[in-house]
Length: 219
Image 1 (cartoon, rainbow, N blue to C red):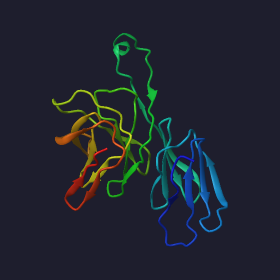
Image 2: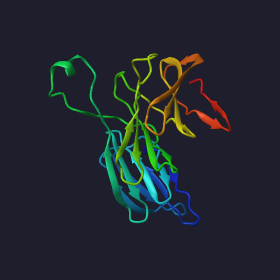
Image 3: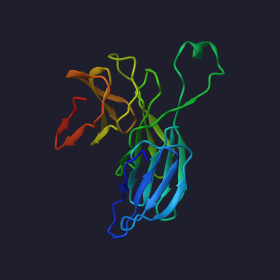
Image 4: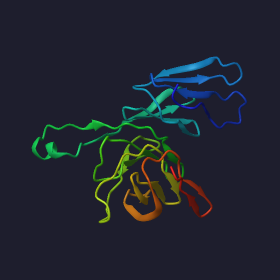
């Protein structure tokens, strides 16, 4: 099992524990006796933590699948596949280069007020845009992909950790640099870049937001 058990918020005393594994199994487990209440086979394995809002569970797989599961009916409401176009010398000369599936290790982040889900993903190599996108929580439609509208940086690395959502923006740490960045939740445009005192090679902990302060982990 790759993900930690997720207890879906509920006033009911029999709310199940939800667990996904690297073999593509999603299990609802009775929190009192450990029995399996229901089981869904996913398109691929899962290492990202699960996320939920009301009766909707959001699951992200290592093959870029993003699924909304109705917890009342145990059925898939929508299925989005996260893809990207490799940015290397071949793309300029070969029109047959196809889209690649992204890898997702970070938990989906839900903004209930905007009815969207933010995904951080991985492409295996630096590219010209930050690896974030927003999906409509209700329909699964793509709302925006993050833009690198800044003259200060031309390459962006993979994101292993979910960003933090603060008011009208998402905030993330850029690996292998001293940069903290903000992206608009309305359209994915870059809002700011700021320098930290130290460089983080690979972030392992999320930014923590409290009141008007953001706590950035050292590693």
